[in-house]
Structures are given as structure tokens and as C-alpha cells.
Amino acid sequence: ARRLGMDMRFMPTIEGLQGLAVLSNIEIVFDDGVLLESVGSQTGLQRVQVRPDAGVITVYNTWLDPLLAAGGDGDLSDIEVSQQAQLSQIFGIISAHHQPEGQLGRTVIGGTFNNVPDSELIQRLRDSGFVDHFAGQQTDITATFWRTDARARLDYIWTTPSLQAVGWGVIDTRASDHRLAVIELALR
Image (spheres, rainbow, N blue to C red):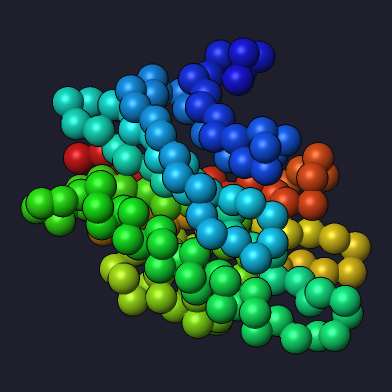
């Protein structure tokens, strides 16, 4: 953040050894976070608000349990149940933040959801009214997880319909096995 001249907020997880972070070119005017229940590594939901104009944009950042079979048995059902429970927690937290009127306004939800676009988990986000600006695109151009033997889309950026995306993409870098998904928004 210092090198890029950006504002930054960090929410520690796993006793501060890992965590969630948001970098912003726009001043962050508020931040908090909540730890989520997990069968795997501790994770959470981070909230920051930026003020690009007279209003704010609320950004939620998360990382859900990785969908990996324990002990090589191939059974992912416990982790899928945990991911669904984490998403239910996230929806509950977001709903509580926007009471009593219940209007989400300008909201972005992003992070590593550790599941593929045709999963029940991702369908729940679609059904909730959030917009996936990468939807329907080929895996070759939307894959955010890259390893020699595998490519998948595991990282997502969702917005409320009030935010219009004018550009999107995945930054091609080999700095990590997760490539950065980016959207550009037009503010009305």
C-alpha cells in the first residue's frame, strides 16, 4: 500500500498470521470485520467503505473454506456444507448492516469463494440479486486460479445492480497461483 500510495485496511485471521486486506485509491472512511465459522482455516468477512463522491460504496471482502478433500478420500460434502453456512453468515451480516430499510445501495462483494461458477454456492449469489460481470465468459479469460495442471475461476467480484461495470478482466501475473480479478465501475 505504501509503495502504491494506496489506502489499506487489514483484518487479521488465524491469530494474525493471515487475513483479509483491501487496497484502495479512494480514501477508506470506515472499516470493520467479523470472523466466520469454519471447518478449515479461520476466515472472515471484512467491510470497508470508500467515499468517491457524496455517497459511500460498501466493499465486502471474504475468503471461504477451500474445497479440498481431506485425507484424499474425495468427499467434499462437509466443506460444501461449511461454505454454504459461511455464505449464510455473510448474507446475515450484510442484511444486519443495512437495516432497518434493507437497501444495499452501492455494494461490492469480492474475494476467494473457492468454488466454480456452476456450483450451488455461486448460484445462491446470483439468486440474491448480485451481478457477476464475468458471468458467461470462457474459463480461459476468467480463470483466477492458475497452476500448471489446473485453471479455474475461484475469485469473484459481485456488485449490486446500481453499480455499472464498464470494464473487467483478470490481471495476467505469475506472482501467485491466484490472479487478480478487476472491475472498473462507472459512478452515476
